[in-house]
Image 1 (cartoon, rainbow, N blue to C red):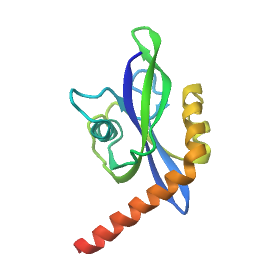
Image 2: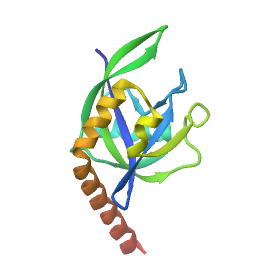
Image 3: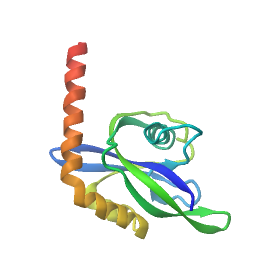
Length: 156
């Protein structure tokens, strides 16, 4: 089974999580950014690259929270199963222009509404896992945001 890496782009406000989806290129379904690692590329670098290429965002990878799930992917007239290790990515920048902007749309959704955005069974497994560790993701994301804010204030 092939293996890919992906991100769950998210932001936090008032202890609520919003997730950024992109459309797939084949069928236009709402998915999360993912792709193959380049030769000698770490999971973190691959995640950052895929997030920018597919969703036009940059951020901080929460490398302590990887979740690997089997995802159905459209390929040569059939659906193949691939293992994808997803990492939460706290979005710190969203760009108006990005490499795949002509091929994809993007959509923010509150975490409580993700099942309304995508009804795929493979994502249901992923989002159930996230639900179980959501308090830790929120805490880690809020810590990262505080550090970024402190650095920005120091730089001024």
